[in-house]
Image (cartoon, rainbow, N blue to C red):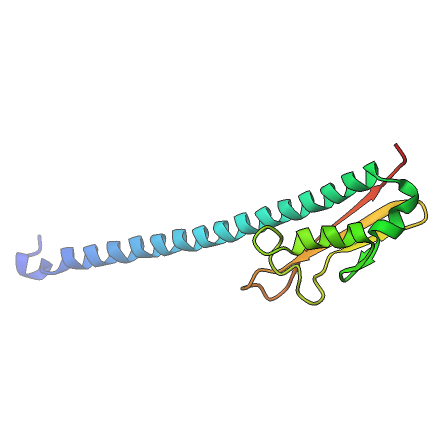
Length: 143
């Protein structure tokens, strides 16, 4: 058996090693929390983009199908009156998508001859380097 003098400081060393292991675990949890918070924010804005696109598709379905291209087709904030009103909602401060009004991020709506509608919505958070994108394609038929 070792004498008390030879064992001096061993308990302090064990406590310090335990504290180090605990600290690494806490740092890992904080990192996971940050990633989870970012993913939640991204999911929120993707859901909002989906809602904006579905809102426009619903409005198109209720309107005169012969005027889809005239009323809704647009790129970069230039298009029919109903397209421009919808873009104003998507890019509105506080209620729209962040960064949707930046150059290159404006929503686009394309309508082909078969009334197939392609809606592209982009947004960008202040800390993000690249924009996020949601694209949906729908067939609008006369009701």
